[in-house]
Length: 450
Image 1 (tube, rainbow, N blue to C red):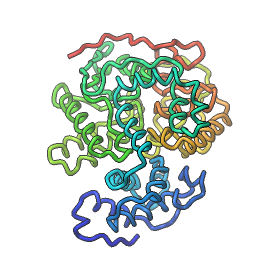
Image 2 (image 1 turned 180 degrees about the vertical axis):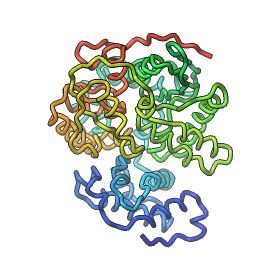
Image 3 (image 1 turned 90 degrees about the vertical axis):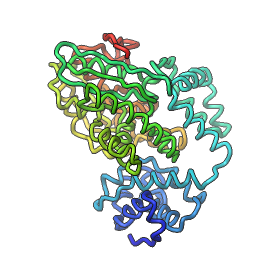
Image 4 (image 1 turned 30 degrees about the horizontal axis):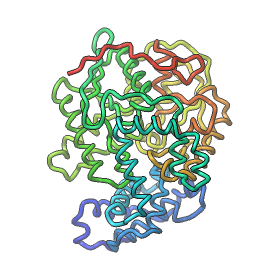
């Protein structure tokens, strides 16, 4: 693709990178077939190729974002299926991230929309505020249909996503945390950091509980380092770059303290959406002389937990006879190119693993997308659930809490995190979602705080 950026524009590193990405695009259109919004809506401007044209025009002419550009960029899930499909290697993720930051800087949204996005950016990364918000949402959940009928679809979507179970109280809240160390059983064979995140501790604490049990059972010491909790992905996808970089720097500081202290073999993530962002810290902070090298080191050490578990020799599993459909999150298969390890781990653990038809298409979760674009997200959830039900599994396994919530609202088939299943069959408690499972998984470990 030909571009006409000025030398002054190209002096900005973000613009220079976007220009390089734009020049790689050859207009082939292969991306349209795997783009969820194009598949649903059939609008060229809701395909990666269409959005690339809009973004190019906006950046090249150094124009404020228009309502038309904002509409179509906002509809992008950042599922990154287009990057898997693209034969030219167009790095769409960095381009759309730049576009979102430009939109946030130059476009003034309507008041209610600004307020809603500010709510997401403020509440979701803060475990204390999220706990109280979800506690309130439980009480207001019956009002969801009425709010939807009144046109308040985004608020209705938030209530629909809220669980009827009480949210957990996290160990820490944004800005107030402590380092926790979980000692391994027997001889220490490795040492890893585990990102606790901001959503998992409140909505899915059993996931990291299971991860810690599973790792320590196999001789791995686990440290949950003091830090902000949030990886920055939520605000990053809202175009709030200053906030995203603040989270990135804080996490780099926390993990580098461990790397330079007792050392780390890896930084593990159980939410693949977070993993894609942390693996990109080196790029995000490339222009920061104080953090560029340190961020690159953190990104190089970061792995989805399935990548690390695949290196271990897991204990013999008790066969369950269960058929599991594995839903590979977009952030894992397209963002991190991790597809083999989760299914191999499940198969080795004694599950009959089945692929989901149209597995490359997003379920519609996409961070906060299912709250910001509830109609499209709901259609994608229904489509995903129908494809899952076609293979008639006993369980759905996945590697991202957002996908678990999104798919769980569209099917009655239990949805369980990969590590909960692996923990269970190697000696841990039965996951709560599996019939006969415990309501809450005990930790079975003593943490050392320092």
